[in-house]
Amino acid sequence: MGKKVKNKDIAARLGLSGTLVSLVLNNKADQHGIKKETQERVLAVARQMGYFNAVAEKGESAPVEEKPGIVGMVVPSMNDPFIYEITPYLQKAFSSIGLGFSVFTRDPDDMRFNRLTTSLKKLFSGMILVGNAVDDSLVRTLNRDSYPIVLLEKSIKRMRLNTVSTDRTAGAAVMTQHLAGLGLKNLLIVSGKDTALYDKEMLEELRNTTKKSKSFDSVNFTVAGQPKAGEKFDFQVIENFLRPPHRSDVIIVLNSSLLFPLYMALREKNIRIPQDVALVSMEDGIGFDLLTTPITRLRRPLPAMSLKVVNIIWSEIKNQGKSKYKRQVNMSPELLVRSSCGSYLK
View 1 (cartoon, rainbow, N blue to C red):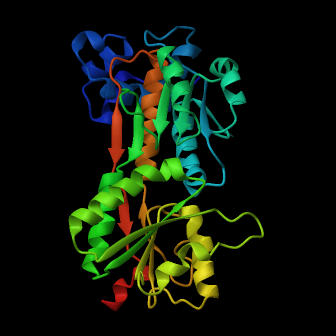
View 2 (view 1 turned 30 degrees about the vertical axis):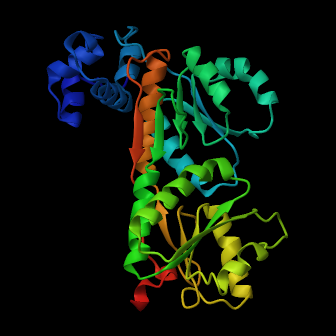
């Protein structure tokens, strides 16, 4: 039999009063106005410390029912640095509270997925929906059915849903200020053909921030396709912007998956980074610091985002998708300055 976990042990771990912990564990928190976020913290730590296991070993049932199960994460593609960077953090966080975790892909254009929804709802206790993996109409259906969901890096206007996203406004502002501070004047912003819906919001934020800045002489935009295996980046989509009359002195890549093919294309054309053109990314990517010229980019707060997603979906599962409060969480990215923007030359 495992060591008995007492309320005071949980309280000491959290720095809370024993009375508060007792109220939460005895299902009286709502009656005493204890915040949902505090309740989630208490129950999560209780799980981690084995409180529910100890109760089960004694043949008793806890006043607060734990909600075991599996959470599914629906993603548009596994070929995305964000997905395989955040997945280990999510896995660790779910494991710590006793929930299973599974990731599967869904082509946004494949309508057969909608017919599987009933089966998936039976399999998963709740789902995390990433980016444009699921269309808005299906999200509305799941929400109407009070099914536990959290949107990750996705939002739907005119609907109050649980969302955890990068603060694109803050990201665009910090990158714009940095480039303006370096004296760069002519910007070329490259978005992806395959990620047009996802890139749209960041593109609009960059339009707004660069316009407000009034530090730039020109801001141009182009769209590039993601090269398939064995293919090279289509250099023609940016070639005209690297010579007069446009002559961009910095390229801003919106999607990290385009960064490496573009980087290699510039090297093959003997275009030096940052001497001939600076290069920055609005997303982090694996290996960006290992390139000959490390890349300046924005980095999402992955550990913090993961914990917030897990806490929200666990609360939704606990409340059968009928939580009174829906949370829209925006988390500011961090600017990582490297030599690709020419900062060391200033």
